[in-house]
Image (tube, rainbow, N blue to C red; front, top):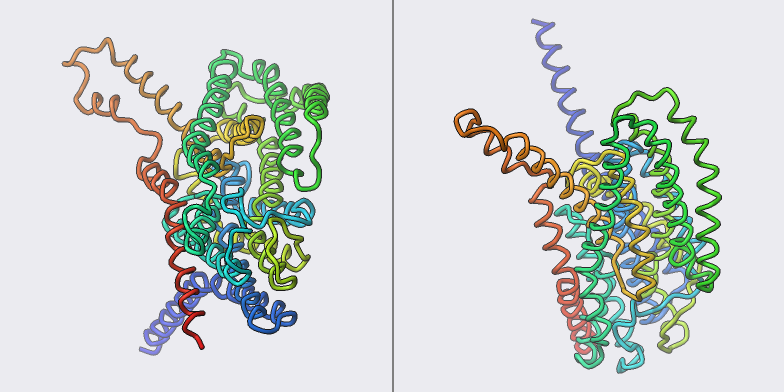
Length: 490
């Protein structure tokens, strides 16, 4: 009897411990995020006073919230393919992304940022400084909430489009529709289609090349020795240009001739260095597909680092741009199209993005890396390479593309190429079979094999289409609400 009672007590204790761990895992990240926002409130309150000072505190906390959501949602595109292909563990990806996101934000985020993302509205058209401050607060809050909702449903969306929608809605609420630069909005709307389609096509073309020149060759290792150095050299070249035109653009704007020279030098040097390195790595490998995929491991890690650095350098402005505008308006009493970024403001953005990634990022990393379609390292390599090349091509053409749409579009591209090839192979295998020898089950399988999850496709594309209007509607509601409150508060 005593032993039975002891067993029951031990089971109760075990259940209580399990419940405690589950509660900690569920609410621990929320608690840490709340502590971060409390710290932002404390730091800001030490240097703010008066009614505008209160707005500054509110804006800083909302900016921190926005940064947390950028980390939770947008960073997954940089490391998700490497995690899904098992080139990186989830923990390793979180560490790499956190370090390089923060480094990009602090080292290359720039001392001056545009206060109005992408020039959507003219800040000088605002009726007053107070209206401008309320509009920026509304835009930040709307973008942060929309990113939060998208993360909850498992949809990677564009941070830039979210803040664009917020600024659009707040501008219309503060002035009218004439304040909006509709030509710029048209270009951004076009990028909803251009970004994923271009990213998907480029990734699919590289994957088709890898399959035809390496994977489907009788001697895969010999083919890999020949072509993998070329492919990795192309990646090094692409990322050299990518960092020059995007990753470091807030610190340095090189001439086109210099970019071309650096690209040629990067390709030549990297190819001659990588050729013997890859030959040694390929020595002794078995002549099979999995062995070839291993040769893409380090290039994938390299890509994850640089994509995270460039993302931190550029997308931190989505969190700190409106906040820097509010700081400028509060301290000078004026409105500026560009604003200097105090170090503490950049710190809010950098720490918030890294913390949001660590606390809430794994969900979207798993979605991007493993749940849309199965990624091996060769496919993930094509996704990373496509992300860099597409951004370069778009920059050269002056198109405002979304890095999120490009990366996810590239994943869909390699997934649909796999699906097309697989179904074509199945159809060819069974084309000579008569209906009597080919069972109905096999016929259905041959016709209906799907290697891209349609549920994710529908969810993500739907979220992309409504990002700008959803953020705009939220911002309009918040801005009108703030205006009403200020008019009737005393």
